Amino acid sequence: MVKVNFLMDQSPQNTMPLAWSQFLSEAGAVISDGRVQGFGNPAQEIQVVTTGEVFADLSHYSLACAHGADAAKFLQGQFTNDIAAVNDGHSQLSAYCSPKGRALALTRFFRRDERYYFVLPAALLEATLSRLRKYVLMSKVTLEAVADWAHIGYADPRGGAHLRDALGVALPAAVNGVVHAGGISVIRVPGAHARFELFGEYAAMKTLWQKLDAHAAPVGAGPWDYLEIQAGLPCVYPETADAFVPQMLNLDLLDGISFKKGCYTGQEVVARTHYLGKIKRRLQRLHCDGDTPPAPGTPLFHSGMRTDESAGSVVRAQAAPGGGCELLAVLPLEAGSGGELRLGQHAGPLCRPLPLPYAFESGG
Image 1: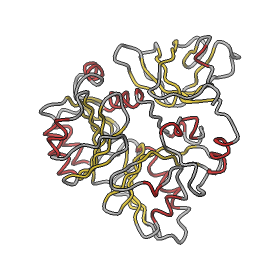
Image 2: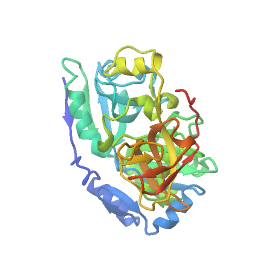
Image 3: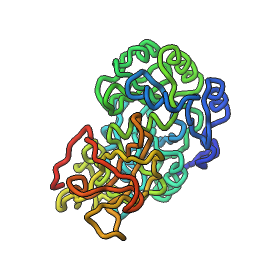
C-alpha cells in the first residue's frame, strides 16, 4: 500500500509552515517564497559564512520519509546508493533516476526510529513522491512528506564546540556520520570546515536555534548554499531534472552510487557508464564575473566551440564573498584548460575555473 500525506502546501512559493515562519521572523529573518533571504545584512552574511560560526534555516529543502515492512527493499530498487548501508549512525547521498539513467533528484538519506528520511529541494518533493508512488505496487511501504520538522545548517571553522554543548552529545567525527540527541538528528556533511545538518521537531529546534544564536551568526539560504558549492556538492532542480547521469554530477566521487547493489531504476545506464564508458563531462567549479547568480540550467559557452553550441550548463550558483558569483556547472573535462568560458552567451561574463575539494582524472 502507499500513503502520501501532504501536511502543508508543497508549492515552491509556500513551503514553510506558519508557526516556524513566525518564529524565524521574530528572530529577524527576511522570508520570501518559503526561503530565508537573510537577516538584514546580506553582504555581511556572505562574508562571515566562510570564516565564522554560522547557522541557517534550510526550509527551502523539504523532508520526506518512507516506512513499513518493505521500505528498505523498495528504496533499494529506486535509488543509486546502497540503502542497506543507511543506519542510525550513517547517512548517504543518493540519486533518483529516470529509466534512461538521468538524475531526477539528488537526496541525502538517514534513518531514525525505523524510518528512512530523505531531503531534497522543496520544488521537487511533490513530483518525486508522485513518481515513486507509481512503483510501489503491492509493497508495504508508506511515503510521507514531513511537515512538522525544522531543518537547520550549522558551520564552524573551530569544529562545532557550541553545537556540541547545546546538544550535550559528541558530534559525528566523519562525513556522513549521524548522532541523535533530544529529538534532533545531526548529520556531518562535507565542507572546508565542520558542517552539520540538523533535523527535528519544532520545539527542540527552536530551543537549539536560541542557544546557537548566543554564539553564531544566522545567515540566509544563499550563503549556506555557497558553502555547498565550495564543497563541490551538486543539486538537481526542476530546471535540470533528467539532464545529467549521476557521474556527470560527480556523485560517484561523493560516495553517492553503489556499483555492487542490485538493480534500480536507471541502473543499466549508470553501470554501463561506469564500466564501459569514459565520463567526458563532469561537474566543475567556476568563478563568474557577473554579480547576479545565474539560474540552474543557464548555458555556458566556450571560445573554442561554435557560437550556437553551448559547452555546458549551470547546476547551482550563489554570490561569492569577494564579488561576482561561484557556480558548479557540468562541462567537458577540457573546458577549463584553454580558451574562455562565458556565461549565458559568447559575450557574457567571464568564468574562471576553481579547484574542487576532490579530484577526478582528466580521462574520466
